[in-house]
Image 1 (cartoon, rainbow, N blue to C red):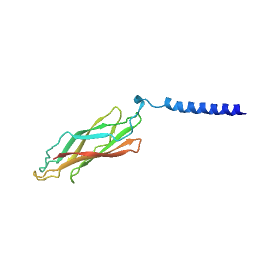
Image 2: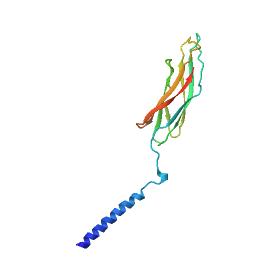
Image 3: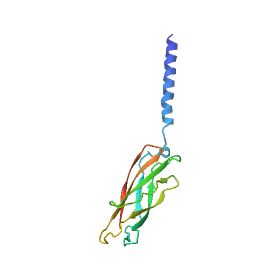
Image 4: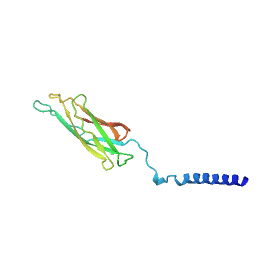
Length: 154
């Protein structure tokens, strides 16, 4: 009986040794590590930092601003997209918001265009400020956040 008990203990020891050894076989190599999911670095750039509005009677007072949004995404699986929704604030003057911008593994820079309507007969001494900020989110996904504003004057 003692012989069978010793054989059982040796067998259990070998099984445990194999299990522990297999842990080391599955340790990831330095090249196999995947970057953790995190927020993208997003930059809004306005192409026209200063615009002139024509507000004399008979003119519309509409000023158009264009620019780019650049996104550096830290993790980019092929099934996930970055959605950026810009928001324009012209200090109370009507401003349009561009449609959502979609970024992917292949698309890192997108352009946008928006308009501000300066009220007719506004004094030429009045200087307005446009602030374009935004929100980002991954789709599909729950991670999201805000984007620092870029500014221009009109």
